[in-house]
Length: 290
View (tube, rainbow, N blue to C red):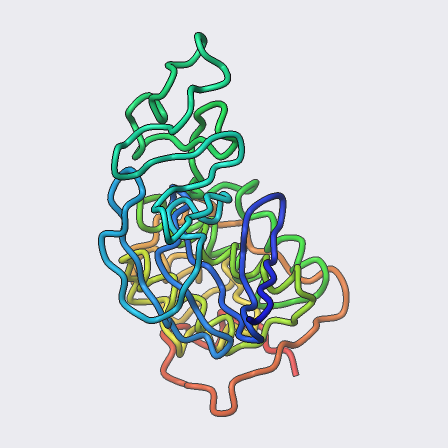
């Protein structure tokens, strides 16, 4: 039997390596695994779940015990169908705990998350809480890119601006969370981000979360890997570059002056072998690093 190891950050499961095969977990806002992605950035499996943890659908052949609310640590026993949730055991088919809640009578004795499993989770098995949250656009939720930009990564400077200005929607906020989760996974493993990684992250997160953005395409992302977007520059037609995104891409751009630059020497990430050139961003809006 092969060995399986898991990569976790602050208690959240990010990926697994099973018998030498690495898979990243892609969660929904609640924390349930909805997709597995292999080391080539290909989606190998997709999942959907009924509210109390039974498998609704599974496309693919991978096996993992961390499915329903799995990134929060819910562990499924395939033989019994039970979910081990630290201090208690959830019976998905019966929609309640196996044993009396240890906080009874302050909590109902057997009821899971006050019968609201789509609104709450209970990772400790003791007390309900909100699940993994989507990330609306604000400086705090986009700070990971600001830090990476400060370290010299140009793509992260551009990602910070996009993170703030692409607007707030259920799908968009979930994409924001998905993208940052994948970046954190690489940072935790000490794996540098490449241009292909950045492009593939967007493609995977857009697909999983059901989101689309006509201006966030592979061509534009390839261009922005190592070329800094200048929102305050002037594009042809005397239009501020920030307005190109607002007019041409329907971005709300609530932070039009939020462009940032590397604090130190720019650090290039490995570019695509054959960069695309059909981006919508005109040359005056870019600072090119060679």
